[in-house]
Amino acid sequence: MNERGFIDFRSDTVSQPTAEMRRAMFEAEVGDDVYGDDPLTNELERVAAEILGKEAALFVPSGTMANQLGVLVHTQRGQEIILGSSAHIFVHEVGGAAVLSGVSMKTLDFAGDLPELSKIEAAIRADDIHEPETSLICLENALSNGRVVPLSIMQEVYELAKSRHLSVHLDGARLFNAASFLDLDVKEITQYADTVNVCLSKGLCAPVGSIFAGPAALVKRARKWRKLLGGGMRQTGILAAPALLALLEMPGRLPEDHANAAYLADKLDGIDAVSVLTERRDINMVFFRIDGEAELLKRLPELLAADKILINGQESNGEWRWVTHRDIDRSDIDLAVKKLSELV
Ligand SMILES: Cc1ncc(COP(=O)(O)O)c(C=O)c1O
Image (tube, rainbow, N blue to C red; front, top):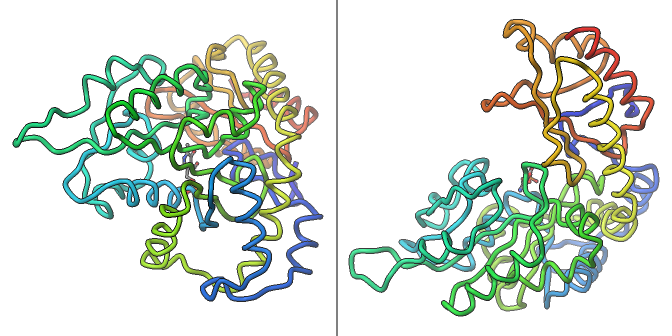
């Protein structure tokens, strides 16, 4: 339960900054990041690059901006990028890749959204005057369907990309969740991407911000694009202070969120009308279906909100998604599952 008394399953983005983060924000020494002299932002970018195994890193306001910077630095107008048809960059970023980078998006339907090498290889354009030029492959790990992409798949896609002189951008919004599930250092995952987005404001609890990381020359270009997009910020130390804590202190507690998601899945499965999609339960997300009257299902978010339990509505494919994070413990889960079982 968060400080306002809500049990909020809508996403891990709703997780609130810790008391330590709020204190660090209050005490942050600040400069002006557009002048490059905000000390905590510089420190954050240095530490992030080191943790992610990249030459340089850039603090940006959101994961969406970090992903769009990835597309911007790897492409030229008229080129094409390859990505899964459920990729956040394609589905949830307002078509930004087409608007900002002027690229077309070649989307591929992968079984379970796990990248399939043969489909990617077949989608790389030939050297033909009629076709756009392929320049970038975008991967996501963890996937927003709750699964983690095995390292071997990342490696084979990266090797294919390099053999065809293509770049790879990794949308690692939940990279630390993936690393925790795979029991790997994040560097072992990021070695298979040229650039990476990592969100600090999801399960890691920072109030704001993502990291874009990669080779120094590309991060330099991304810094300029960030300015063009209006993302050059000033006294960013106030945001870098909690972001540093997110990066350094919070990855270690993600297994707790994953274990709570397993607990939630188990409890939900105990309700007759509910069936949990267990094969997609790798991280802090539980997907399930509810067998019930359409009218009742439509009203579920409103009915649970009366008890300060917040959920998203049913997704267009009929699934429900509940997400665990630091502000949800097992007693919250017990209470929410009890309320849901009473309703369905
Ligand atoms: C897989 C994935 N990528 C990128 C983002 C974008 O992050 P932001 O909301 O900070 O723009 C999200 C946000 O939920 C996400 O789930």
